[in-house]
Length: 375
Image 1 (cartoon, rainbow, N blue to C red):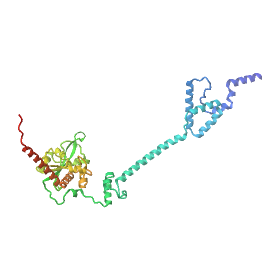
Image 2: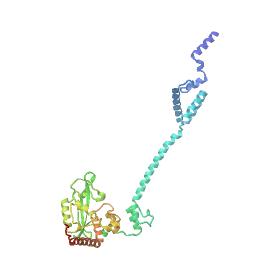
Image 3: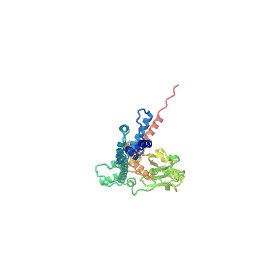
Image 4: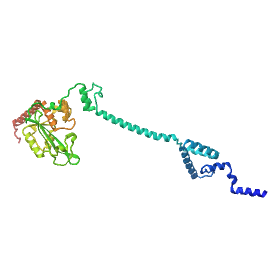
C-alpha cells in the first residue's frame, strides 16, 4: 500500500496534476496569455526600455477600450498579479500620459463645428455682397451726408439714390456738354479725341482704334472706327470701350489720317493731352493753333495738379461727370471743347498778350544799336 502511494505521488509530480487543479492556475487558463515582467534585480538597461515600451503600449490600448472592459480587466488583474508587479505597472503608468476617451471624442466635434462656422461665414459674405449690389433708400437711412462723399466711398449707385432722396437735380452729361439746336457743321475751333488698343507683347504698344471730332458747340462732325493693322493683344475695353466687333470692319488707318488732317487744317484744335492723339494719327499741327486743357495754368490751379485728368477737370470746373465707366472719344472731345468755350475769351486774350510781348521783345532787340567792335 505504501508503495502504491509513493508511485501515485511520483506520477502526480511528474505530470503536474496538483498544479493543474490549483485555483490560481484555473484563472490563468481562462485569461489570455501575456508576458509577465521579469522581477529579477539584475536587469540590463535595454531590457528595462523594452519592457517600458511594451507596458506603455498595453496601457494605451487599455485606455482606448470601453469603461466596462477596463473594469473587468482590472478585477482579473487584481486577483492574479502580485503586489510587486502592480506597483511596477503603476510606476510605468505615471510616466506615460493618460489619454482619456473623452479627449478623442471631442476632437472631431471641434472640426465639424469649425467647418460649419466657416460655411456659415461664407454664406454671410455672399449675402453682404448681394445686399451691396442692390441698395435701396431704406439702406441709406442717413440724410445729412454729401452725395459726392458717398460716391467716393460706396459708389455712384448709392450717390444717385442719396441725390434723389435729397431732391438734388443732376445735370445730364450730354445736355451739359452739347448746345441744343446749334450749328452742326465745321467751326473755327474743333476738338479731337482718339481711342487706342494694345498690340505686341502684353499689349504695351498702341495703335489707333477710333477717332472722333466735335465742333465748337459739341456736335459730332467725325467719328470712325479704324481697322487694326496688327494683331490686337489687349482691347483695353474697360478704358477704351473698344470691342473686337467694333474695329473688325473699320476704316483703313490711312483714310482716317487723311480725312482728319483735312478737318484740322487751319483750325484751332482743342484736346486733353493732345500730343498723344496727334502722335497716334502721325499728324503735326502748328503750336499756336493748339489748345491743350491739361496744360492750361488756371485749370491746373483749380485741380491742384500739374497734370490734371479730364475727369477731375469736368467735375471741378463743369460740375459734370464723365468717364464713369468705359470711355467714349466723342464724349471726351465734347468735354474738352466745353472746358475751352467756358474760358475761351480769357484764354485767347492771354495768348494774344503773350504774342504781343514776344513781338515787342523781338523789335526792341532789333532796334538796339550795335556797339563798335573794340580794336
